[in-house]
Length: 525
Image (cartoon, rainbow, N blue to C red):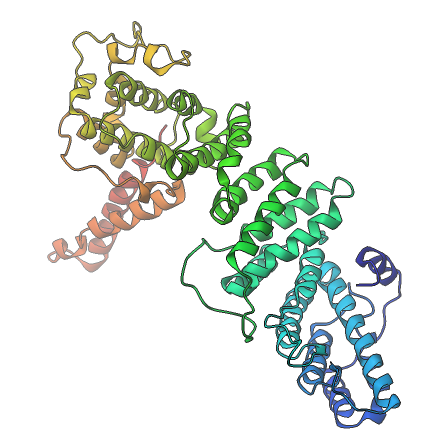
């Protein structure tokens, strides 16, 4: 783009409100222009409908899209080395190309500054134009010189730039963008476009908001899967080679890494790095030092996400991290239960502690740590922690003594030192899980039942942890109320010998008492 988007935004905002064409008028103008070159000025009228991005109606964006798609299909703006046309025809093509470039600038501004509906339509229109430009390139080379691959990376870069500059990147807009990321050619060229965009941005530290927008878009990428051949642009070899993509991803990370981020943006960066960049990198092992630094930070959320990166490096690249279990142990605190990414930590801990060859003193420390957290956890978290404890005891039957440890102290004399950073030295193996016993009479029946099973009737098969990771208060209440409704008897049938009014009244009161009794068990007073 010859003109900067930011400059055009200021130009568009100061213009006064204008009158817009009706849908019928827009349709008429499109037909007039496409039917006769003498109506060329009608195209200017259509483009002027996009002059003020903050007020542009959706119908105007659609009209411009339809006109230029038809122009591309008819190859009215395609330059060819084999063309034998008059000077007037050549000038007309040049003029159409200028209008096409102007349309992209105006659509980019609509995507950046328009209303919510206008942004969604502008995004869709820009991708449709991109697809058609790939099929009908602006320049037609001779067959001997023709490239096998043509994907309009520069257009995808404009889309990324506009979205990154958006003051309000809504959920609907980012979700709509992610729908295009199911195509292999879009994803591959996305990294190439992003590399170019970040190089332009590296002149100075970009705003935290802009980086957040870019990371938010990348977080919508699907998990890397082999064999997915869906393409958005129906052209041959439109997907860049894997080697080229990996090189671009490495470059993107090198450009992102040196910048300073707020805590919120840093968390999202780690999510994108672990889930979407590491699988596409050549040598992810070079991230070891970065993850180590993040893991040793005092911020709970940052350490949690970095731990996932370390775990991936341990599994896939066989790196060794000193005292990794000690660091995992330290991450489980009261703050963990309030953390946004706590479910990731629980899932990782389950993987780390799955081995049956871990030292008993280490496993006992984790069981006791989870047990102590039960005192401050909410019922949904209690179910997760109790499930963890139960599974640890099932994997390590020799630890069942923690439930009935004759040498274990009571609450006041518990030898367990929760402030000890080394789990082996915490004294957990000389303690007992009295915290679990406290929950055997909990008002939430699911919690009480699970706590009783740990002490009295531990099964031989592990409990499923994954279904509990996204459990919330709302889901618990909804499920329990549904179960209660199944238990309520048809009380009215028991009062056949009584007057109808008495039957209904007594049934209503009885039903209310049962329902209230069951629901009250869900709450801790």
